[in-house]
Image 1 (spheres, rainbow, N blue to C red):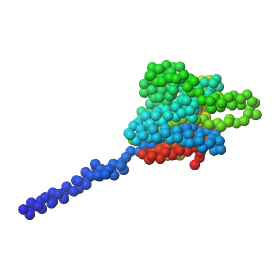
Image 2: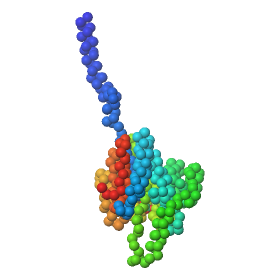
Image 3: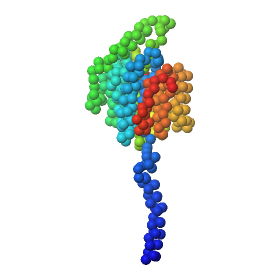
Image 4: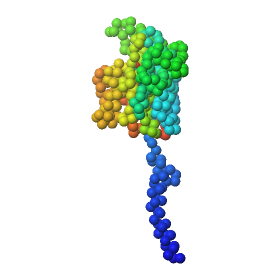
Length: 349
Ligand code: ASP
C-alpha cells in the first residue's frame, strides 16, 4: 500500500515540469503570455503639407481637420485591430479624406490652369511589391480605389486619363459628373493664382496660403505587411496634363515589407527627381539607417537642399513611425496598436 502511494507521488512530481512547459507554450490562464506576443500594428495619415499659418487657422477649421483626419485614422485602426490587411486600412482611410471637401483629393481637389480637376492616386503592397496608380482622371469619385483595381485586376501599374476611366467603367468603379469635385474655396484659390500670374514676377506676392492638402496613409497590419496610399488633385493652376509625384511609385508612394511604407506630399516635381519614398526605403536597406534617420536625411537633407518643399509620413516593419516636413505645417496623425487615443498634429512639435 505504502509502496503504491510513493509510486503515485513520484509519477505526479515527474508531471510537474511537463505541466509548466505546457502552460508556457499555450499561454497562462488570463492570456498574459499571448498578450505579450500580440503582433504590432499601426496607421499614420497625412492631409497635406504647406504654408500653414497658426494665425489664419480658426479653432473651427482646426477642429474640422482634426475630426476628419481622426475619423480616417480610427476607421483604418479598426480594420487593423480586427486582423484586416494594411491595404484595406490605407484604402479606407484615404477614401474618407477623398470624400471630404477639406482636402485636395477627390471632392475639394484643386483646379488646373484650365479650371478642371485632374486627379492622381497610387497604392502599393509591401508584401508583393505590387502597385497600382492612376493619373489625370476627371470623373472617378475615389481615385484610390481605381488605383487598387489597377494593381489587383490589371497587368499594369499606371493608367492615365480616358484609358483609366474606361478601365474604371469595366470594373464598375463609380464615376461622377466632374462638377462633383467643385468647391468655392478651391475655385477662388485658382482665381487668385491667375491674378498673380498676370503680374510681372518682381511685383507678384508669394503664393497665398499655399497649402497643398494631398492625402495619404501608411499602415502595418498584424501579419507584418506594410502598405502605402496617396491621392491628390495636384497643384493649383497646374498645367493641363501635368502629373506630380503622387501617382509615381517610388516618388509619392512606396511600400516594402523589408523596410517601410511611405506616402508623400509637397512640390511633386522635386519628389519625382529625388525618388523620395524609394530613397527612404533604400537608405534603410543599404545603409542600415533607422526609419527616422532615413526620413530626415531625405526630407530635411536632400529635399531641402534641392529647394523642394513638403513632407512624408512613414511606418516601418516594427511600427516605428516618422513624419518629417520642411514647410511650416503638415496635417498628420496616427494610432499605434489598439490605443484608442489618436494623435493629431499640424505644426512642428
Ligand atoms: N505632391 C502633389 C503634387 O505635386 C501636391 C501636394 O502634395 O500638395 O501633385
